[in-house]
Length: 177
Image (tube, rainbow, N blue to C red; front, top):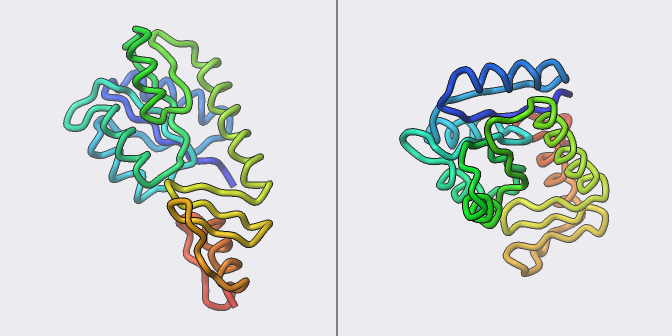
């Protein structure tokens, strides 16, 4: 199944350039041009990674990153013209996984996306998945919320695992049974 990347940038040329290079590498790309639309798309499309500009209308990229980090561990790559060290530090401290400044090399951006998604795949293969303050260790059948253990039966954990792996797809009752 193709990995889905949400690209958020108010410049259509940048959206088109990033979309072209990511689609050439086999990614499914969803794009939008402002922060409010990005927040709506994340909940609806459930992308595997977000490429996020900082300077956007309605809701800026820093606020989008802050809101995403409240309840999600989705990887975020900031792609922005803000190149000062303090801008990079703030972006990374807010929860961005990487920071790329404009002008940028599309090939380098694609390589960074691949690396981040590869690291995420390795983590989920080990059986541990984190979403905000929720941590699920499927190999050990443990679930923690806010650092505290959640008491679930083995069947409940198997059901949770199936739902997490489906990420946005509808599962039939027969499949779940």
